[in-house]
Length: 142
Image 1 (cartoon, rainbow, N blue to C red):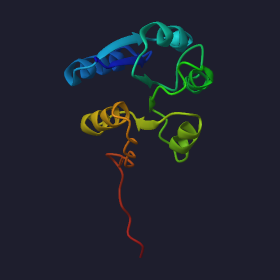
Image 2: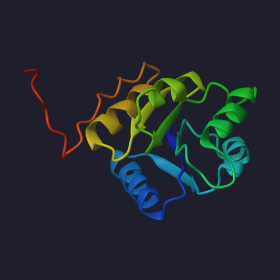
Image 3: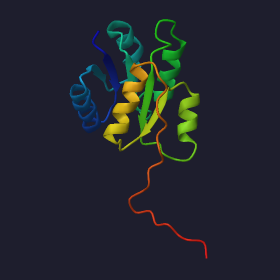
């Protein structure tokens, strides 16, 4: 059975990156830049997983997640939020909203693949480790 991923991303460069990675990982994919299309596309293409940006035009990614979770035929589809929201508490809020995993942008390819593979295999997704900002400085207590 071919696994299919529905990519919901409005930024063309990110959309291209995710499409390229799906091809490299051996997955089929369907792409939309409009969250309002997710339920209809999911019903017609029956994706094995949904990869969704949280900041979308027209509708919040979290509202889309709520629509998917409310749909009897789609509610068990794994959902990964891939978002620039990386403030303290964002991951918790996104997971509580119904996503199965949270990954902050920019993504790291191997953890991204591990998360997708885990969810497609029916196992819990690994937790994303907090990213250290490239300009962060550690300050020792004096």
